Image (cartoon, rainbow, N blue to C red):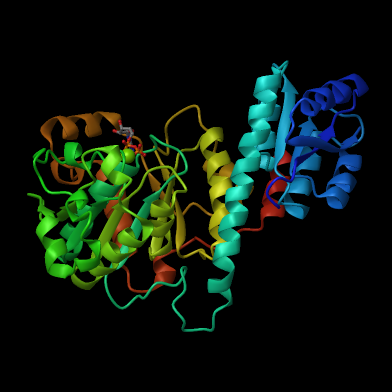
Length: 423
Ligand SMILES: Nc1ncnc2c1ncn2[C@@H]1O[C@H](COP(=O)(O)OP(=O)(O)O)[C@@H](O)[C@H]1O
Ligand SMILES: [Mg+2]
């Protein structure tokens, strides 16, 4: 969409007063306009196909076709129009189901004007990121076979495994650290762990490293002259046998590192290390996108909760447009058995994709390991959570990509999705 163009919104609600109120609130915003209104699900589907609005506000309870069914249809036929669900309190189950159907946000009625406007801006911003990335990814996808595009890294050297999650606190740093150690133990090959969470790195703390240790920030100003030997001089050796490239000590110094710098560093590491495990932070800044682009495998960590599912869905759409195939992007359900979540099979049906890797929840072991300052794959090797990490390591070291991605094939989204709503 062109700059300066207004955010065009489709309002769907069977109550005329509600439609009018929403239209009035939107009318107050100089950068928003109403693209149309619909009084039922079927009308919404037709209108969405015709108008292709930037954002759709969707009521759940409507007489003809309900909002959840309409959302399922629209998110498959007009995927570029993100949907915000609106529902009255006490309809938690509906909210859960609408997120599984493909809605991006939900608003519980009655909501304030601020909540409404913020939600619209938020989903619209995310959609813009997706489109911008698509525009950049398209030329690479169109390049002739054999050309090295963003999504097709060279495979002859070390393997880059990047941990990503669109949401914080899901266990990226914990799992990345333990996986790096497990890869080294399993293969006895050189492994480097990169703290790519540039502004918020905490691997130094987790691995008990000296606050005076060198970091990637020591290369700022000389990235262009950095070769393998120079890079080696800022890596820190850990007692577990792995090398670590630490994150800058302050967020300010992280800003001095560009996406191109990150690419240069990771490609140099590929020459000497068999496995390069990269931690990230939840962002779509250029540095993070680079860590994803150069990766052979992006392990996307999620927990089985609605909020996590929502963010992973958006990320998967971005990843698809970036040209990441099912082998490159692999889902990992962490804290798999923790209560209060949704079932893995429901999540798989909703995302139209298998979750090939799972890691159990074991807070007790993790706390004991952290207190000892030793990764749990060493201190609690026999625990289930450690076994799950070793299984992941084995799959990633298996030669055939098919074995590594066992079960990562697409499942038919529609069929699975429908089953979810069958009574
Ligand atoms: N499988 C697990 N079982 C129990 N707790 C976990 C598990 N994985 C991570 N955690 C805990 O979750 C918290 C967040 O983990 P962290 O690795 O810092 O997440 P992130 O890097 O994604 O922000 C930590 O307290 C960590 O110990
Ligand atoms: Mg972290």
